[in-house]
Image 1 (tube, rainbow, N blue to C red):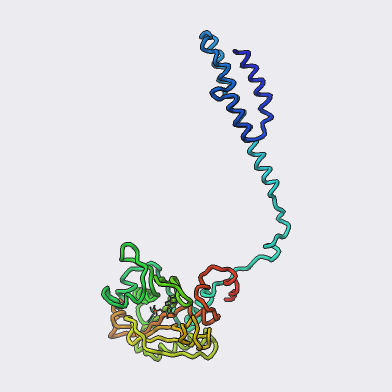
Image 2 (image 1 turned 30 degrees about the horizontal axis):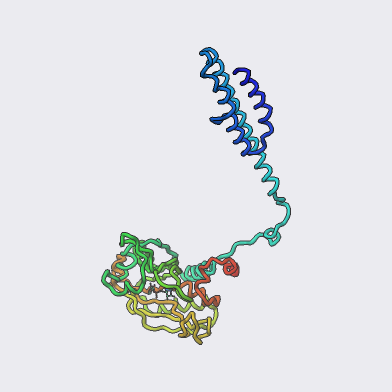
Length: 347
Ligand code: FA5
């Protein structure tokens, strides 16, 4: 048995070097160590052997088994390394050569048109002494509705289709008017600020409606603020942004958080007022709802309405961007098509 074992060892050592891939390695292992393999074949005679022989053959056989396992493991590493090297050799790249992308040159990143216009508007308001405020996307009922004079039972809640969280106490803010409340909570009057940001509504999309879009809120609180102040700031904003004569119209608008409330529309610049899918054939685009802050809202923000008053507005930022760049479908703005966004590099 010992002699057979030695012969098998020799045979193993001679042939293991020739194994070139993982499959033949696995077959080889089964051939030597499998149930019906060569080693067991030799050890089959152990039953009839004396205790002394069993002991010495058993010990040698175990050593040999370990040698087989170690050698195959080392061989496997060799084969794997050779396979990886072969792959690398095939797919190597000369990075000193120009490929298609490199030949076109590195592309410099630009700004999204909503960001461009948002920053321009922020600059306009900063130059008029306004602060810039922010607010959370996830809001509570109080900041989105209650404090804005929209109690639980108020029909105006249906005007804005809301994404509620399962607890029915939190929601994705439906408008940036939440920033009015946060601004009042954080500041003592007099103050004036604008607050841009994303808002969310559960509504069907079309050429001028998105589910996630941008607004820019504005609020001014002081002594004896009037509608004339409000109109002055709205006019300044529009003339700075469009730098052209604009046809605008002011009409009454209902929002529970302002009294009186207005809708400031601009003549549609896509069709020049003739009527198109953006303005739904009316020739006018709803852009800038605004009004004088309702006393209940000031009270909810901790401000005494007998001493202070103010105005607020909520600009539809995406629609302003569409008018400024003559974009005829709001869905281009958030479609993620780089060819679209790349056209707006400036800021
Ligand atoms: C509001 O959200 C009020 N919070 C605005 C406000 C603020 C009024 C302060 C008074 C004082 P409204 O739901 O109309 O109002 O939205 C304001 C603007 O956002 C609209 O004029 C429009 O330009 C834009 N807008 C509304 N819904 C969408 C939409 N689905 N997609 C894109 N823009 C929209």
